[in-house]
Image 1 (cartoon, helix red, strand yellow):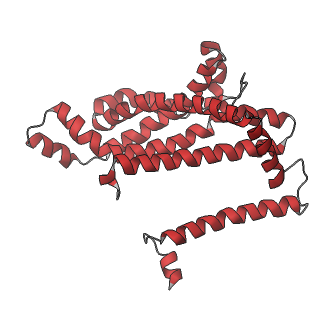
Image 2 (tube, one colour; image 1 turned 90 degrees about the horizontal axis):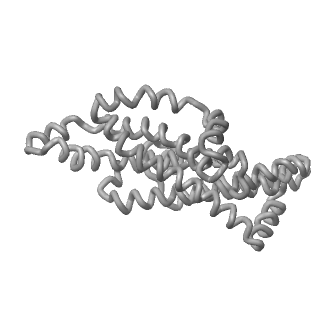
Length: 264
């Protein structure tokens, strides 16, 4: 029966079924939104209608302001995330593979990843200023230490047998790192980068909280002061859409760069 296939664990679904279920969930949320707004169940100032959000979006697309906000936010997100990733990937792999590196780095990492990023904004303004560098640093701090922990866990799960086999075949320590540990970690690294990219988008509004003049976070915060819920929802939906695009991009890159890890 179809219900047995649908609710059986670890059973792959046909692509048409997956698309149908995903579409149904989106339509259900959209229907609830329409029912609450067009049905008069919520005040207009509390929740804008889909038509109002669409109108606000079209207005900002036609005057090109939405594209300017998107470009400003992408600059902050990509710069902060790439800086964090370039540093976190090698350090994380070394942390999970070498106990000495883990003992050196883990106390600071464990402490910093529990500090709310918003609490550091006054210090970042004092040290860096209120330019785009401060916003990039918010994204960097919000993702770097999380990436370190996740990637070190991936590296720590690499089988010791692979390392012993490489040494048996005459590999040097550097060869073991480059040709055994790094390739074995890459699928998990890509998955964790995809996850932390989602976290980077969630820090965007915090990053653009102070002295911002453009960006989606600035657009949301500026609309909040006037209770323009249509613009607020437009900004939220735009961030969500961009997040989905970057998530799909990471999945595509994983399939392209690591075809041998399709089942991992």
